[in-house]
Image (cartoon, rainbow, N blue to C red; front, side, top):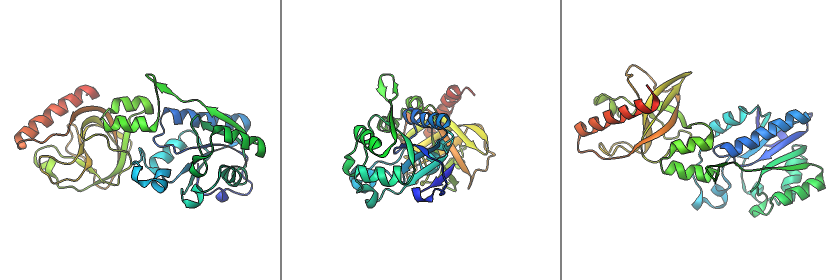
Length: 309
């Protein structure tokens, strides 16, 4: 997959394209339907498939006071999009210049002159151009003017609810990681490097792998989760703890993971992926080490049942 930040970076003799446009935060089932449709159309019409996205959510520039943390990071997004067979990932900087383009300017500069689009696929709620002035009907009208076809890909519903990034985020904030997996078609994950911590877990018999705070992947509600720790092609059953250490008051908010029944793994400075499978309990403060250890043992028994180990 070719990764670029401007249409001008495409080779001069690059093929005509089928393009989809969106923030693609989370790559949930609705996004996946769109990405699969793009690739199917590209294969049928012998066009190159292009996913056009942005380096940040528009709110980070236009309304920073309401901007949310992303559900997935750039590395996660790239890998998930590449898995669909996408030919080109165009990640444009969402700056003031781009934000101020009218719908017609955006279409002419980016889709027509830049990408030579023959077909553009978007979701039902697609909006574009300065202040979101353009919608699907605007895009269809401009398509007739500039000579490309527009197709709208319908949303996906699960349990009567439209799958969306906002619903995914709301469920993560409630710790509902099992429900989130239904929206994503896969477990929610965090990816990052394991760093040296205070080694408090090791002193009480439960060594943990502490993920750096710049990890990718939205952290769910503070609490304990059954899940998996994946590293170098291996997948280990684990208990993940999200939050601060309420008992020791020494650790800022992060995710740390205890690999069940293993104390021999050296994970320092390695990139790992944590899969969140099921919520065990909310974060809690304990009277002392004995009550904490007893609760951890109960957590691990629940994890063993959930993960069938």
